[in-house]
Every structure is written in structure tokens, then in C-alpha cells.
Length: 429
Ligand SMILES: Nc1nc2c(c(=O)[nH]1)N[C@H]1C(S)=C(S)[C@@H](COP(=O)(O)O)O[C@H]1N2
Ligand SMILES: [Mo]
Image (cartoon, rainbow, N blue to C red; front, side):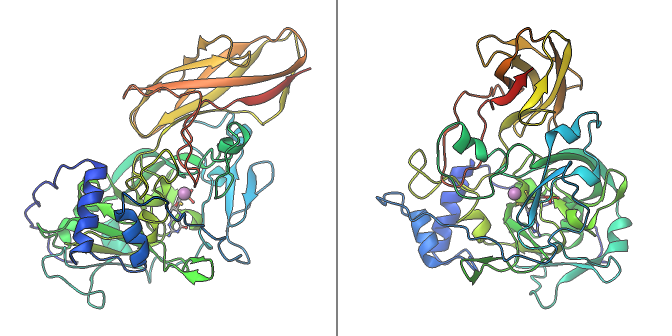
């Protein structure tokens, strides 16, 4: 392992996300940025803020793998969606703050690779390291090298940017592309690993570095018959040095195969795609980087957004869910306790209001966790329905950043970041 006495790099430039994106796109035009696997047309589209119409990317289905997920997926816990598995919220009832590994949702572009920690190496390379090693001569760390570094533990959710996507259609009548998740593409775990910042410094981080791009060891992703290469997404150095982990444990166990064994990236509060599983290499670059996962995907496209799309998605939005099946039944004239959880990528959830009459009246839920950022706050309300019939349960969260869930989410073509209050159908019998 390389020596560690390296001065810290200067702080990364403080641009907002859109400003940062514009800046790096201009650098690409000037030949100062790399965009392997992203078409020139795509980048020109992003640049062309004045374009009348944007050609929307249509993410094709991943090629069906024989067994995309290794762990058992009992139907009472999971809804299978292609290569992915969504956790059923009713299965989280009675589980603690952390989602048990067996119940944690899985989002695979292709299929889980079963890797051996002993042959695994993390390879760091690129112009953002002082020795500027090429991909063929990387700075390497083995699994035991990482385990020998100072360990840190963090509780954080991993949530897909498309979690709740189906509500754009069911509640708002919008047509969107992508996996029609309800609200179960989220889990919270206690992650243990090393700081990415420590590894970058030991690898010889240069003061010229601007982006890091972790890449998975799973198969190349095919979209519309074309390979987009292995799953990878650039992360600005400012976030990489802040609170990002290279995690090797999940809830006190080695990472399960499906969740990135032996090592995954964990980017607290950001869209799930940032948390690259089965990480094999990290490009550290002095030039801005682009991949399909920060150009064609994981931006907001559509009439309410800039013609070239929004800046690449970073933090998650705010959401709430009941620990209940869709269509759950409740006997009338009896007392029930409704439980749920609310979370936000912008701060801790400090207040939750619940309506049991379809949104006509609201009351405060009792909170069961000390509100913390990067994770959910559990809550409950008592309910004694008096007459039989169909109704909707609603929950609305507010976070420390002052965000509150709206009644309607601003739509986008790929159905990301649904934040509106979800109407949960139930029947009183
Ligand atoms: N290598 C790799 N990393 C990946 C993915 C993938 O398909 N391959 N999927 C991403 C997406 S879109 C999400 S939402 C999270 C899901 O993490 P989980 O499967 O552990 O729940 O992993 C991210 N990291
Ligand atoms: Mo995702």
C-alpha cells in the first residue's frame, strides 16, 4: 500500500450544481473533459440550452440474466421487478430502525457478480493522482489493506432515484419510463468501512483532481442493443472528500453479495446510483468526467426542466411511507396503530402529519426516532375508523431544511424524485 503522509488538497471550488455542470460541459467543448461512452450528440444536447426539443433517452431493459439476485426473494417480502427486487413496506413493520439485510431492496442493472474478497483489488488511476498512473498501472489496495485502515460507521439510507415512480402515473396520470417502483426502493443500514478521503489521500491525490468515478465489476449494461460499459458515475471531489465511505460491512455483517460484496461506495443522502456496488476501480481525474449515468440518466428532462435537462441529480428528495400493504383492511370500531417512516436527502425529518380521511384533516404523528440526517424517522398515529368503506391514508413530512411534501410532484420523463404526498388505499370493513 502506498505511503500516507500527503498534504490535503485545497477545497474544491464552491459552485452550485447547475453552475458546476455548465462549467464542466464548457470544458468538454474546449477539449478539457473526458466523456468515454457518451455520444457527442448527447453532450451537445446538454449544452444546447436553446434547443427547441430535447431527444429523450429511452433506457432499454437490461438483458435478462438467469438469476440476477443471489438472496432468496420470498413473495411476502419482495415484489420482483426484472433484475430488481422491491421491499414490501408491510414487511418492515416491527423491524427496527435498520432494514435487515435479507429485506433490503436490490437494484441491479444486470446481475449480482459473486466475487472473492481475496482476489479483489481496488485500482485507483488517472490524472488526478500525483503520479498520474494510467489504467494499466494503477495504485492498488487489497481487501486486507482497506480493513487495516481506520474504520468508520454510519447509518444511512440507500434509495433509488426512481423510488415512488409509479405514483407519477397512478396519482398524476403522467407517462414516465423506468422501473415502476412503489415506495420500497429504499433501505437503511449501518455501514462500516473506510473513508474514501483516506484512500484517495493514500493513493496520492493531486491538488488538480476535480472528479472521481467509481466503476462496478458487474457486467456491462446494454441499452437498446448498445453497451454503455460498466456501471459508473462521476462524483465531484467535494462530496468524495466529505462523507463518502468504501463500505465492507452492512448491519454488522460482511456486505451481502447483492449489496456489493466485497466493497461498495456509500454516498450518504445522494441518489442510489452514486453508491456503486462491487467497486473495482476509481478513476481520479483532473478533468471533469461524464458517463451515461450523469448525462442520459439521472437528470430531470421534460417541459418543466431546462431543454438540456437539469444538472445531474445529487441529494434525494423527501418522502413518507406507511408500514402497510396497499389495500390493507381495518375492522371498524376498533383501535389501530398506524406506523410509518419519513426521510429526506436534505436533512432530518422533524415533523410528520397524517390524514386518515383522504386529506380533509391532519394531525401530528408521534416520532419514534431522534431526527437525524441521512436516515428516516419512524412515527405512529392511533386510528379508530368508525364506518366501513374505502379511504386513503396520507402522510406528509417536513425536514430541517424546511422542505415539506407537496400535493403534486413536478413530473420528469424518467420519473425521478417523486416527492408528493402518496395516497395509500385502505378499506375499513
Ligand atoms: N455496480 C453497480 N452499482 C450499483 C448499481 C448497479 O447496477 N451496479 N445500481 C445502483 C442503483 S441504481 C441503486 S438504487 C443502488 C441500489 O443498491 P442496493 O441494490 O444495495 O439496494 O445501487 C447502485 N449501485
Ligand atoms: Mo437506483
